[in-house]
Amino acid sequence: MKILKYLVLSIVLFTGIYSCTDLVEKPVGLLAPEGFFKTKRDVQAAVLAFNGTLAHENLYGRQFVSALLFRDDMCDLAVPNADRGFVNNFDGLNSNNSMMRSIWNQFYVAIAAANTAEAGAISLNLSEEDINPLIAECKFNRAFSYYQLVRCFGDLPYIDKPVSDPASVATIFKTPESKVYENIITDLKFAKQWLPNLQPSDCRSRPTKGTAASYLASVYLTLKDFQNSYTEAKYVIDNKSTFNYMLEADYQNLFKAIKTVNTIKETIYSIDFLANVIGVSGVNGGGAYNDDIMASMTMPKDYNAGFGSLVPKLAVYNSFNANDYRKVVSFDSLLAGKHYTTWAEKRPHIAKFSRFPGDAFITQANRYSDNNYQDMRYAEVLLIAAEALCEVKNGPNTEAEDYVNQVRIRARNAAGTIRTYPASVTTGLSKATFIDLIMEERRVEFGFEWKRWFDIKRRDLGDIVFKGANSTEPRATFDKTRDYLFPIPQTNIDVNPNITQNNGY
Image 1: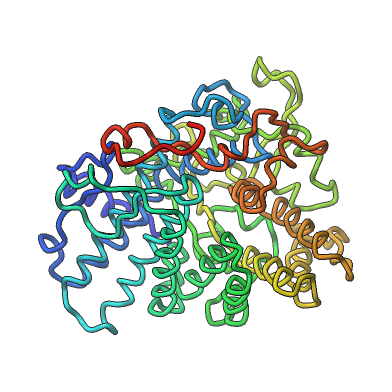
Image 2: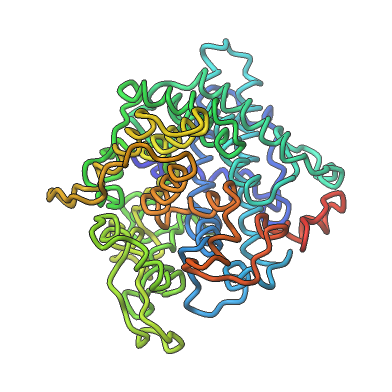
């Protein structure tokens, strides 16, 4: 099921009903729920509208995910652009950066949507059994948004109710990062309790119990609460049949837009874009909704309106084993500098977003696609379980090794031809070696899926990957006392002086 068939509803909600609020500069206030929500169906409509807030150029259509990719050690900026360059180079990034403003504001739009829908659901005074599944979805949506924000910005304003008085925005203080995480966990636990095992039509853009547990596992891993991380990941693994999860046999299928509609059982949570809305090709939702530009960002500049901006260095391409099928899937061909005059070296290109984007190539300038961006897949749950269990046991055991081997066995299937690489995990590894193995497995398995930067941060790998002898993207200017967080947009500080800036900005 393509959740973006509800895009028109999202547009109505955000450009019609909410037009009285400046969501771009002050994205914290929406309508009072008692003025709109009369029935459960009204709540359902608002819940579905949340998905449209993520399928936006400011988030999964370009700005958020490309900022994370520029920040890691796998992607580089090939086409000069000041704001992107500051993010990419750890040099010159400040509070006026347009990418930071886009990310911050749009996630608060999403949070406002979740808060409003939740308050509307509560206002109906229905029984727990009747309304709590929808409230649980609202809580998941809010937790998901704050989880992305807190990892990027640290302490930040935590708002969990609709804001009816815009003047009150100027009185809000930043909530400590630890408290934000506490609230995220509380919301995810409620979601796990009340969400269904499957959504209608097995839609993977709406959360289930398995989705909530998977994100709990990820949150706990980020917080280094390894026992709880393992417990949640093991719950998902033990109940994979109930949630209809399994590894996709062919790794390439994970990145074929027409395949990921509802046939990929590895997807745990995705953000959906749609090239054709109600039968009309290349129509976005206005205000950059349903605007997916990642194919153009990663394609060669002179190919099908590609921008050629987000391009790995040759060292990254060479760091993938030549026998790994995931290298074939992740990269496009090497192209010489003739494709952009400032290139002084051959450049590989990212293939995951542009090779099979559905109808994108028959629409205008590749701005619209059928891509379902998978923010959580079953393979990640397996690797979370392996990493957390290794920490709990102070070293790998057979169970942890098996989780990694499941991912590696799938990787050997190269479109039906079984390869010998990657080999199964060598037994008897030390804890440190096994953790390093998992981090490398994540780097390859989730290459260019915006996971790497958060891995670098949570494992404090910055000095190693940017300043070490084996760095694929050396950055002498990296400073971990500053660069693990983004700067808070200056426009928000100007509106509310109570919001202090992050260190170093």
